[in-house]
Length: 413
Ligand code: GLU
Image (tube, rainbow, N blue to C red; front, side, top):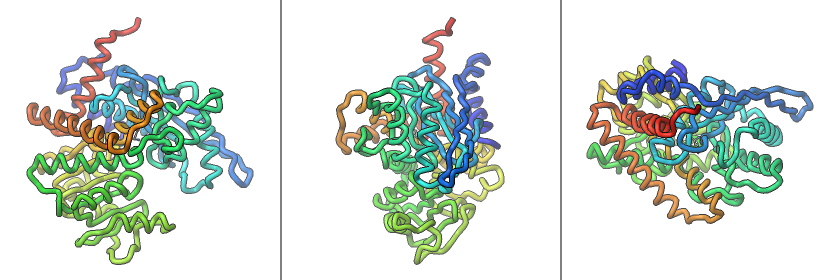
């Protein structure tokens, strides 16, 4: 099942639960704008390569579009459409005044030099320039992009405008209008979501065993924060495979190992090597899929033994897998809630940029926790009241708010 199939399936379920009509369902399923651009790249060796770039604005009913930019070889228009739709529900669910968007370039950033990466980023930014802006659509980092990518995008946009426009992207370095706390925000949100879910089930998070798939920007720091809070992180993985130690790993030491030039966590001293598939099937309390879509699917869901699944990635669980996990009473904290810490602090960054007045890291973190706790409580209450999964409850709140904004504004003409 593709990411778009999953997203549309989840939307249909929320629409059914909310009793929305077919016309509104159609509106919510259809992106408002989809842009496909050619991104010609001059390689360092002088040859020319033309990459495909995308920006999809799924919905604008509640405010400017918001969402990341992904650099990944498998990115295509359908994936970006699904990811943009999830951004719409995510922003509505946590109550920030945005619609949803996503962008991407079909490229493997690991195969490009730094100069090539900068050229791809700047050309992509200039191609989508007509539809982005602080009041229109605000990109941010996602898989394969980072704060340097955002600095280049901001600089390209500003160069064309003739003045500095910090609010055009979020997830920038603090030195050029970024927010304190944005770098670790998605991971902090994953940690808070883990705490809320365990607390609700009466389980102490201290000593809880955790496996994290995707030891990247989100999963790496999530593992470290959970470890620092007293959880036992027994396994982590990256694209090359995973490492396992039943007594617990030291994520900070693993991150240091990668920063000092190691290509993978695999082979780290004192660990056993496992595959990404084996990591998902470990008998742990908490599983954090923090890599890509569709990794928990119909074929492996009955072997996923974790009691709590906290979705750091977007769309890691397919609807078929959801049904299997629900049957065995696993608690799945859905992506649009569990990984919303990133866009929450993106919103704080944008507000700070627009006001040109910056907050302390403590203030950012306190506001993040409060915002996520209130979103979690709302989802949990609706799930109990309606007897639906946390995912369906989260989707119902997000979709319901967008439908409400649409109805209130009315249809033009
Ligand atoms: N890419 C992140 C996400 O999927 C963050 C998006 C943003 O900050 O706009 O939620």
